[in-house]
Amino acid sequence: MANSDDQTYYVIPLSVQREGEAYYIGNAELGEFYEFPEDGLRIVERLQAGDSVGAIKRALAARAADATNTDNANGETGADSAAAETVDIDDFLVQLREIGFILPPHERDAYQRRVDESAAGDRRLSFRANTALARALFSPATLALYLGVLAYAGYSAWLDPRLRPNLEAFYLEQHLTLTLVALLGLYFVTIMLHELGHMLAAARYGVSSRLGIGNRLWDLVAEADLTGILSLPRRQRYLPLLAGMMVDVLNIALLSLTVGWLLDRGGNVFLVQLLQALVLQLLITLSWQFNIFLRTDFYYVACNYFGHPDLDQQARLYLRDRLHRFSGGRIGAAAAPGALVPRNLGVLRAFSLLWVVGRISALALLAFVLIPTLTRYIVRAYDIFASPAATRAAALDATAFAAISVALFATGMYLWLRRR
Image 1 (cartoon, rainbow, N blue to C red):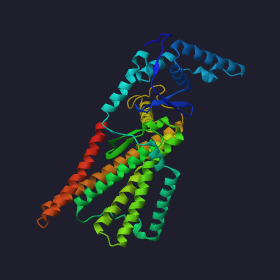
Image 2 (image 1 turned 60 degrees about the vertical axis):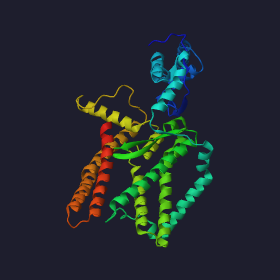
Image 3 (image 1 turned 90 degrees about the horizontal axis):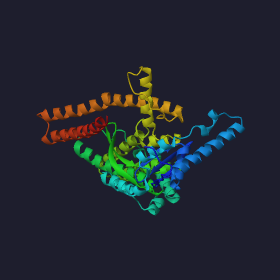
Image 4 (image 1 turned 45 degrees about the horizontal axis):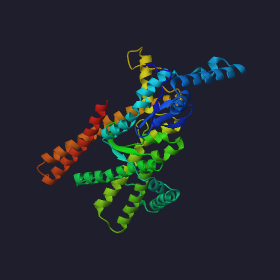
């Protein structure tokens, strides 16, 4: 739709952060951020200042002419000029209207309605914390205390081998269902603490967040939506992204010290093994975060470090494009012009290779470890249930354990396949 030269627009509240030669422009309340070139930023700034479409066109044309004259004076060609690659203003304004960043002045109330509708339709929990409290929890003094606890736990484990991870903590002979349910309950608490760490660290910078349930392949996970941190400078995003893992490390340290305290006092054997199993599960969770071929915490750290808004989405586009090219158009799909971010193309290629290898490895783990293990649980439950020598309690225990394990896997698999 063409814009008349005297048209002006209302610009919704937007944040701007530079990312290399481009800019992240977005709205934290809507959770929407887009990457724009410098000319796009200039257009947005002039719209915010109340300039008309015609005034913006004249200003950018004059800027491009000045840049061209400067290049000619320096002996550069128009093709070498950065000003030669300008944004089509009419098309860009249409794009801004479609994503809802600009509105005709008489429709400015539509922004607040959109925010309200977005909040009402979002089933995730909205999280807003007192900024002063969040800053106190992530202050230098708190960091010193945090490091002190980790150092003490590490030193204690070095002196006392009983505090080190027990690699056999998952091995159980009895009370399978009780242990599984108790472990799931405790693990759920640590997951919530992990996500709370993310959200409190974001709140330290005044950024609100949302908490929901999702999946990584067939694994069920809690997800803190930290999209709003894109309104922060890049260096300030690391703390919210890493805070969850920091909480996990603290939990491992505190649990290990608790195990030592219980052992010194002849604590309950079942409780000790349960806490050791929780420590082992947290260590597995921490290692899982480094599977950056999934959207894990460390994946977002890598995206932030390399200045890519979404390496996973870019890798999918890149791989489809390469399949389409190498297959002569029979497989995949060609990427639309400009869809692939040219910045750090080497990083994208390396990540795409890692993405493929990671997915193949995960499917191999599913086929040769996870499914056979679940099958053994089912067979074992059936054997115990069918055995005349087995007690009713043992049969129910094994059956319930297998049923819960399969139900968790089936739920995660359903969510994954539904997204596929």
